[in-house]
Amino acid sequence: MVGGFTRSLSSFTYRTFFKKESTYFTAIVATGVGFSMVFNTAFDRYWDKKTAGTKWEDIKDRYAQE
Amino acid sequence: MFSRAAFNSFKHAARGASAKIAPHSVLMGATVATAVGSGAGLLYLNRNAAHANMEAEGLHPANHPFPQKKLLGTFDHASIRRGFLVFKEVCAACHSMDLIYWRNLVDVAYSEEEARAMAAEYQYVDGPDDTGAMFERPGKLTDPMPRPYPNEEAARAANAGALPPDLSLITKARHGGVDYIYALLTGYSDPPPGVEVREGLNYNPYFPGGAMAMAQNIFDGVVEFEDGTPNTASQITKDVVTFLNWAAEPELDERKKIGVKAVLLFSSLTLIALWIKRNRWQTLKTRKIVFNPPKNWANNKSSK
Image 1 (cartoon, rainbow over the protein chains, first blue to last red):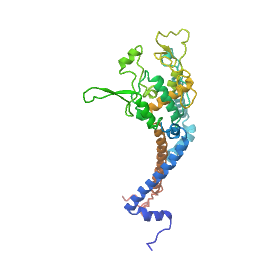
Image 2: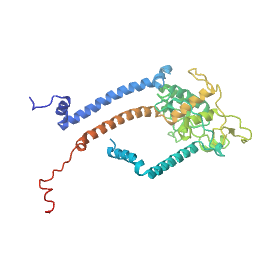
Image 3: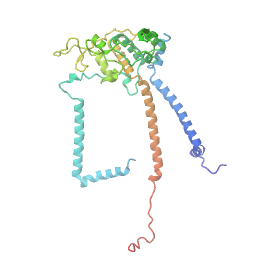
Image 4: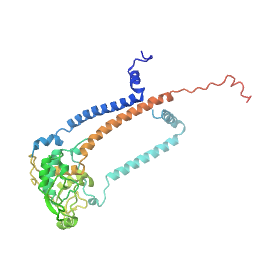
């Protein structure tokens, strides 16, 4: 067993990610990439619903293959 | 949070003011009232000034509900498409639009094939060829909107000395923006009694000075819309103004979208930063500094 530690989420996070700079950096980048993907997908879906019917993508089917 | 000490001292002073320093607080109150009153008065006069030469500013246009005017509103691209048709058939006879290219229309109001076909209807001068001569060729996507006149002098000569301005940025270049352009195009009327407009000019109350070189060009039915929208003068004007707004601000849709994202992200990061700051300062702000005098301190004050 690794030396005595508190069995909490924050303690686990500290031991696995924050103690070594290499893991800390990897965790930051991974969180950034993941958050960016999720946030952009969710926001774009919301924005497309909000502007439905007004964009070119919504009206282009009326003028197919001229 | 924000300087608890300052807040408490202000409360204490306010409570004690009436007791000890009444004249000071009365003076303070009088000063504040004067400042606020004069500020409000100046603001009112600034907004509601009447003067002898208001015709020089032009009648203030009404507020029209263009969807792209709202804080998070974007363009109606069907309106942009109709507006370009109006521009091409009515306005392009006199007005240039040098900053818009045929390729700018692709995936905004027209498909690539449609834009290519429209560009090819016009002849453009190109060259020189191998013999050194310039030649004419049908338009491509990379060409700009065709110019009605080759230069300013030709434009003035054809329009009784007046230069029809380039419309690429007109909604950004005129005070009042889309509302002003819409009001101007629909605002032609007979001059009121007593107002003389010289031969060749047209009365338009929205135009600064009242006398405008351009005559009314948009009437009911001047343009036929392909999607069946009723072609009343107001509808035609609304669509062409939307097109002009797009020409001046093609980035509007994208700008507002990433603007919302930016505000969301930055405000979240600010709140996180505030929390981290307060978390790191807790140890300092809650520390206690204690002075433990040596045991013989009070007894030997004289023996120094």
